[in-house]
Image 1 (cartoon, rainbow, N blue to C red):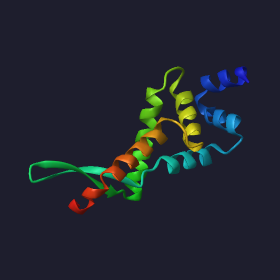
Image 2: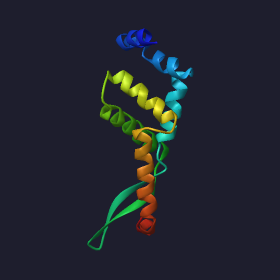
Image 3: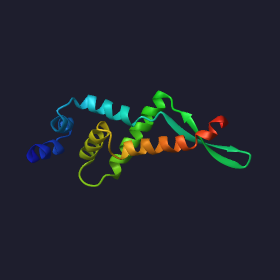
Length: 124
């Protein structure tokens, strides 16, 4: 397995074989599942009312949610230590498809903040 991983790491054309080899699934379906799992439903926006600043929960449009999910996946990939970017990204995508990893933690944290500030929803 180690020799196969080294060959895939050095050949940019066959990078998605790593995901296929480690999960025995189609890499495109793993990518879709990861993006779907990381996509947030609600985010908070800062709103200033009467000298005070509130974090108001707002629903996310599907296109904006996918953009946020991809941005979070890439930033989580960059924060990982170690090997090439392709391997770090494939690891992060597989973790996100399994509902673990930094990007999933970011989504859950965003949902917790939105839930905590639900009382300010009337400021929309």
